[in-house]
Image 1 (cartoon, rainbow, N blue to C red):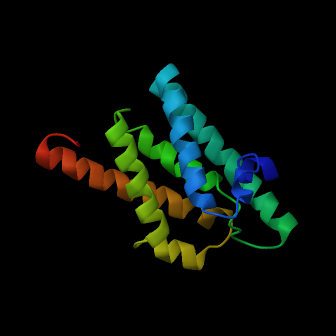
Image 2: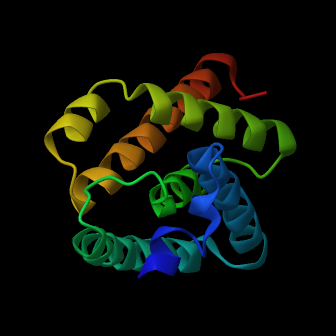
Length: 150
């Protein structure tokens, strides 16, 4: 369970573990979406989401602390969710990364409520899913307003 939660130890880096998790999510998403159909990537996302919820719950019980900074699978999932809805071009990937980190760090409503009320496995994952949705809202707003996103 530790390997899933920490993305094989990447979360133990003391500097910016969440950012490293997001970068891992970008790489994973890029590779999956480049070689597999979106339906298979969506299936993988749902499987990884369920596995992550279980793994985080077990890991939190073992470690005795709710939201540990080394748990970064939530960033991988959030970033992967964003990538499923954008084009795999450098500028869009870069903007998706920056926007996701912005929303994940600031925890803008309703993510802040989830973050404060739920420190369990549900809260760890849910605030990143909300950050991904907020990122997609910004991206789609640009696309619908200007006809493209960069």
